[in-house]
Amino acid sequence: MVGTPLLDSPAWLRMQLLRLKSGIPVDISLLPSLTVGMENVKEKLNNILDKRNRIRWMAVAGEFGTGKSHFLGLARHVGCTKGWAVGSLVANTADGSLAQPQRHLPFMLDTTVSPYGSAVGIVELFKEWWNGTRRSEIVQWARANAGNLHLADELISLEKESLTIDVVCEYLGAKMLGARTGNPIYRRAVCHHFVQVISLLKATGHIGLLLLIDEVESVFRLATSRSWVAALRTLSTYCCDPLLGDLRLVFMATPEARQEIRAELPGILQEVESQISTPPEEKLALRRFAEELKRFGWGECPRLEGSQRIALARLVADLHIRANGKGEPFYPPLQIREWLSRRDVHVRYVIRMLLAYLDSYT
Image (cartoon, rainbow, N blue to C red; front, side, top):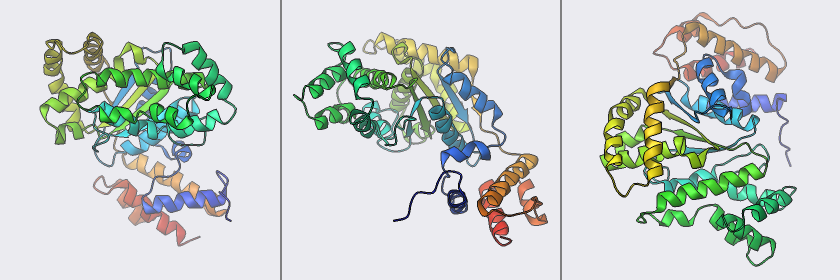
């Protein structure tokens, strides 16, 4: 049986180079050493992860190929390093629809990772903690919240063996919420479930939950105007609802979507304010979101210029030397230098060509 390569070992580094050449994301722990030109968005990320700051979210705009996916991977690494659990959501799928939080919540929970567990997904992490060293922390939290949080009551029943772990996990993973599409109180149910999960995460040593949302532009590309309203209500709740004070949010979109949000938000705010059925806390969150968006704006995922592209190429070349145990100072050949300086040539393509060139001299 072949063992797992040690992180940063030559075998592991060669595997990462193979991923780069194949267009597959590398391990997120490698991303800081391959990051160039993202100082501004990295600073914004560190700011929202600082519990002393009031702003809990950041929006990042960028065209295709400017590194939005790279930044999301970097944010995941930074969040875990700082002690946050991290969940992910791609908004362009049916299960990831921002307009349907009862559908995307189970999906997001299934992607959650933790610095304090090897499993993926809140249910699998819970099983790992319950059968490991964090069981006493979970039981203590359940007893402290008994009668106030349904999850706490279920955990006490699990401890007493009057419920099975499968029943508790079904509730924890929010699987039943997905069937509540027509229920007028599903938004409150989702928010309440978020509160319970985040509270449990804090009891197990996490600072809170960082949620990463990609492709927000799909809301405006595919959905009806009613869905725009629902999606921005959801987004503003995650960003600004006081009940979710230990949730942090990073969402990515194209510059066109940024303009759509700026253009549509005032009308959506006016429409929601006039709705009798909308809970007061949602109206408050939307007002706060609109004000914060106006005051703090968006971060930019910048296109790398020629010198920055060359700097990235040098980082990749250094990685190649570490992986193969030999090499010389990197002097890119003329063709690669020309490609690196051309904005119409995707940097991913240039990196693949660079690695093919380096392999030929290994």
